[in-house]
Image (cartoon, rainbow, N blue to C red; front, side, top):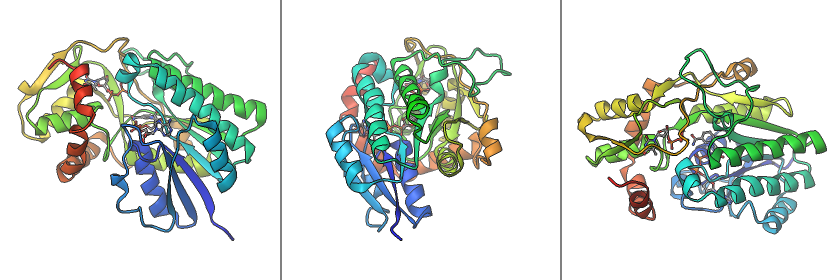
Length: 339
Ligand code: NAD
Ligand code: TYD
C-alpha cells in the first residue's frame, strides 16, 4: 500500500517547522510535504536533521498561486492538509496590511479549492485566538469556541476571514475541515521579531528590550510542541466541521515575561525600555481549552518549564538567530523601533 501524504503549508516557519519535524519523526507511515514560499519568516536550515529522511519533501510555492497549487495537488493527491502558511506578525500588519489579505485570505481560499478538487480526507486550518478580539482583565473570563469573532488588527481580521472561508467550504461543499485557535506560542525556532525571542536575543546582547505601553497586556503562552500535539490530535480525531481552542492556562503580563527572561539570564531590569504602544493593542487573551481536553489533549509544559527550555535552546543555537538578526530583519527593527 502506498504511503499517505500530508502537506504542511508554512513548514519553514516557526510553528509549521516544529510540526513538520514532529510529524516526520513520529509517523514513518506518512510522507510529509513541506510547502512554503520561504518569505522573510521561512528558513530551511532548521530542517537539517530531517532533510535527508525518506518521508520528508520540500516544495517551494506560493499558496496564493492558483495554478501552481492546483497542479501540485493534482499531481500529489494529498490525503491531508495542515495549513499554517500565513503572514503572522501583528506589527507588520499595521504597516502593510495588503500582503496579509493576499496570503491569509486568498491563499487559504486557493488551498480550499485545490483540496476540494482532490477530495482530501481532512483540512486542518491553523488559526489563532486573536480572531476573538480581546478580553478585559477579569481573570474568570476566557475565549471559548462560542465567543463571537471580533478581530481588532489587520492580522487577526485576515485570519478571521480565512476561518469563515474554511467554515463555508464545510457547510457548502462538505469539505472535512477543522479549525484550531491557539494562544501565543513560544519555543525553538521562534522568529526574533516576536516578544519572547526578541527579548532573549536582545538581553543576551545587552540591548534595550522594547515593551509596548505599560507592559500590563496579558497573553496566554503555550509551548510550540504542545501546540503540535494538539494539531496532531485534531488531524486524527477532530470531528469534521468543529473548532478547537488550544491553550494551557499560562497567562502572564508582558512585563512578567520580560522580567522572567532577564532574571533567568542574570541581567539587569534596566534593559527594559517602555516604548509607544502598539495601535489597537489587545488587552488580554486567555483560552478555555475544555473542548480539546475532552478530545484527549494535555499539555506537557507549563510556562516555567517551557520558558527555561526555550531560553536554553536560544543559548545553544545562537548561530540560528544571529543569522536572522543580521539579514533583512535589521532594517525592519530600525523602522519599527526608535531605541
Ligand atoms: P511564521 O511567520 O513563523 O511562518 C509562516 C510561514 O509561512 C513562513 O515559513 C513563510 O515563508 C510561509 N509563508 C508566508 N506566506 C506564504 C505564501 N504566500 N505561500 C507559502 N508560504 C508562505 O508563522 P508562525 O508563527 O509559525 O504561525 C503559523 C500559523 O500559526 C499562522 O497561520 C498563524 O496565524 C498561526 N498561529 C500562530 C501563533 C503564534 O503565536 N505564532 C499562535 C496561534 C496561531
Ligand atoms: P507578539 O509576540 O507580537 O504576539 P501577538 O501580538 O500576536 O500577541 O506580542 C506579544 C505581546 O508582546 C503583545 O502584547 C505585544 C507585546 N510586545 C512588546 O511589548 N514589545 C515588542 O517589541 C513586541 C514585538 C511585542
